[in-house]
Length: 300
Ligand SMILES: NC(=O)c1ccc[n+]([C@@H]2O[C@H](COP(=O)([O-])OP(=O)(O)OC[C@H]3O[C@@H](n4cnc5c(N)ncnc54)[C@H](OP(=O)(O)O)[C@@H]3O)[C@@H](O)[C@H]2O)c1
Image 1 (spheres, helix red, strand yellow):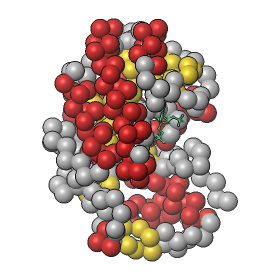
Image 2 (spheres, rainbow, N blue to C red; image 1 turned 30 degrees about the vertical axis):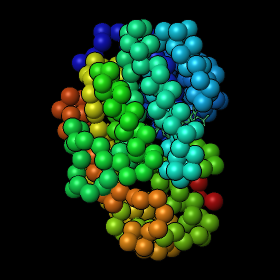
Image 3 (cartoon, protein in one colour; image 1 turned 120 degrees about the vertical axis):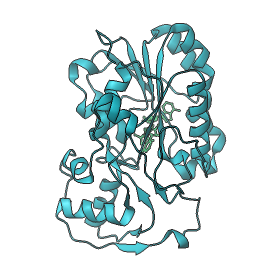
């Protein structure tokens, strides 16, 4: 269901990464101009959108901002999403992934703000062939646990959780790029990657998810939505398709999760999107569609 006129203002956090780049590239300029970005710095792909400074690691700042702006809708995509950083500095990561939001949930209710919380397939252990919207999270690392706990609070407050998969998208800045850009950069640098043949992800470009995410933002559904690619491919297969699409030589090597000794990795994460398909007319993109939606990657 859509509101007759888009609610305003809409406040967005966490637009400085691959997701933000994709939404910034796809959402109409007139829509973006009625939104407000809050973050530590203005993201490049949102230059025409008003920006306000916010560091979520500073306690109390977020509540002040919400009081001042009284947003009708809040998209909470800010996160410490680097799995290794969450393992090494769980307290700092938890402030952004969970506590800042949790502290403000009563205030959001008081203001009457619709909250859309961006979550991840990483809240699951990856042992199921496919994951349905109402499956119960089963995280196996700190990032997944923090996101799963945040989800639980958001759902208890009758708000919205959107789980998204491994994202494809261009290099935004050093350390921030889609899974495809990472493979292409290594290929251009002639640095062979070891790619898992037994780790599966239903990857999708942020751009291919952008229209459905806008519908959710302006809609009135609550609970969990999944937005993901139409099937799961191994990391190895994803990289092959990326290199074929970009017409670059194949230099990478196969690897197996069985030999992985770092933070546990869910072997198979396939978010099915039945609710988004039924309610929003969302078509889970196949890899070719996701790659075609992306800008041409620089070849050197
Ligand atoms: N990328 C993926 O493959 C993927 C997959 C599934 C789910 N997700 C989810 O999608 C969302 C966006 O991820 P992403 O990969 O596009 O972005 P990202 O590279 O993880 O960047 C995170 C965003 O959060 C902001 N942020 C981090 N700490 C902050 C703080 N203390 N105060 C204010 N803002 C802070 C960052 O701001 P700065 O620019 O100032 O650092 C940036 O805009 C996250 O919620 C993530 O969990 C991502």
